[in-house]
Image 1 (cartoon, rainbow over the protein chains, first blue to last red):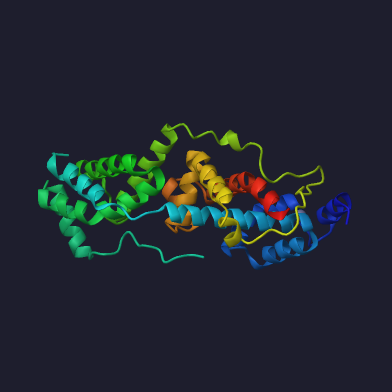
Image 2 (cartoon, helix red, strand yellow):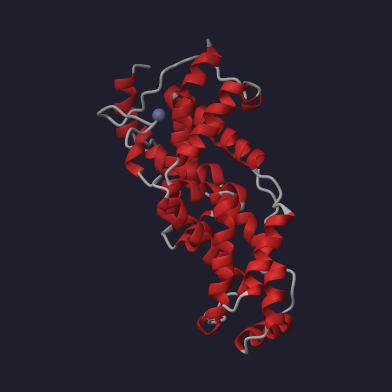
Length: 94
Length: 207
Ligand SMILES: [Zn+2]
């Protein structure tokens, strides 16, 4: 389907939302926090719109890759750091 | 995807809290040592996630000293731990901002673009490999790391609090004193920045 025609359909037909509107739902959708009605609208749009399907796939991958890399960089707090803080806050008057 | 959330208020009884609190109010060294001993580790964990080792130490020390000094201002609406956690998060955010990575306008060119009728325009590059496959490539990992480092302070804070500290959107908003809508927007923009940084990888991987 041509993008322009799709735009008209998504923008005007009842029960359809535009790609732009999809962005307002995407965070809640991925949290599983969308109201049932909005979730139906979201998923219907995704079914009909290949651009948003690609977008959602990349968005998900980016989010998961970000989460993964962040957790890998996340090492346990070194004991020396804990000791240093304890020494600093107990040695002087506040 | 969610891991179990560490509850900052767990680990002691209300009676112990009261004892520590009254100890702090009367300036007891033992009470200070008890509180610091219990909380230094968990507070350092979140501070490091936000700002790295060096600044984390300062954040936590300052927060604890501030708490000792200003214990009279503690109103008891949240636990002492939650109060301190909030102080450390905000100190961390301030330090992040001071580093100068607070230019949200750096992300003015969003990953999601629309035509006049509100239609998205995304290049069709074929099927995307899964995140596992992508992360096997050094190029992907470097890209994601660089993108995370480049995030403006406020976006990084939201990502860390939501994805590493496992706070829900409402809690993140509450901690940072912003609306849930603003927290969602920052989370969304941060993810778009990561996606934009990964675009060359996506294209390369699909060829
Ligand atoms: Zn769409």
